[in-house]
Image 1 (tube, rainbow, N blue to C red):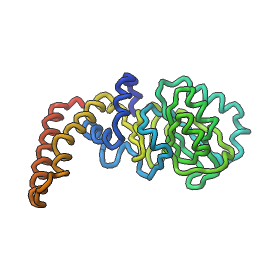
Image 2 (image 1 turned 90 degrees about the vertical axis):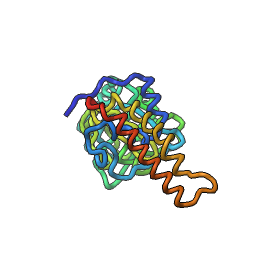
Image 3 (image 1 turned 135 degrees about the vertical axis):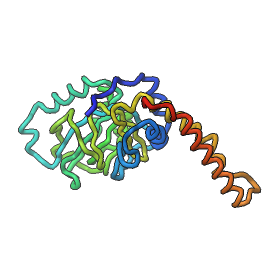
Length: 253
């Protein structure tokens, strides 16, 4: 397993946040040696409870919880303090990735008004939680974005069990420190080593689409169906040539 990369400049993260997650994926698949058809993104459906907030970008902080188990608070009474020190010690912006051991059951929410505000003050921009959240309006007002499985009324025995470890959420294993891009479509957990050229690749792929296949796909007034298909095939061929030319000599990627 590779180590976390040096954090990208904040300006780069701001630019990455300007595109949706599918666009970032389009760039990532051009620069990765991983299996782009199966690696890095969620394999199970997520739900974005704050789509109006747009995408979020940050580095993964990981934590495991088990709200249905009342034994954890008794076993480690200072866990919340120790966990928050871990959160505060990590570079930001940060996205908290939560594995809920109660899955597929849901007994309580790790996230609510208080916890989201505390994490926001510690430099976290949101969460990917394979469990539940509550206090949706209050979390939104805190500016804390959440992708989760569902809403729930209670918190039960919500408690940090382990943190700073590999977790599995929505069918995807995530390591602490991975760069994450997430929105209403789901999330992309960028493999270590793929961060450096991600912005440039996403920018190129978006521009390439706008100059070729998107205009052709929309057609123009008075075109026959045959002409639309012919023009699109030509544009698609140009799109592929542009990709091959741009990335041909990028072996170091």
